[in-house]
Amino acid sequence: MSLIEVTEVAADRIRELLDKEGRAESHGLRMKVVGGGCSGLRYELAFDDQIRDTDNELKRHGVRVIVDEKSALFLVGTTLDYVDTLNETGFKMVNPNAKNTCGCGESFAA
Image (cartoon, rainbow, N blue to C red):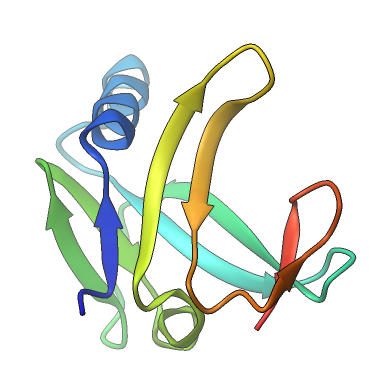
C-alpha cells in the first residue's frame, strides 16, 4: 500500500496553483494532520519548499507531495482528490484510517 495517492485531477489542480504563484519548480504540496476540529484531527495543505530529514517526499503525476513522519501514521493509504461540483469544490481526502468524521467534513478521528 502506498503512503499517498494523488488523482490526476488533484495533481493538475496542484500544478495549476503552483504555476499561478510561480512556485512550480521550487515547492511541493505538504500534507499534514494536526489536532483540532470537532472529531479531534484535521488536515492541513500548504505549499512548502523545505524537506526535513524525517519527511517523506513523493512524486505523483509530476507533483511533489511532502508528508512529515507523524502525519504519515494517519495518512497511509489516503487518496487526495480534487472535486468541483455544485455542492463542493476543493481538495478531498479519502482516508481509510478515518474512523469517523464530523458533520461538516472538516475533521476526523482515527
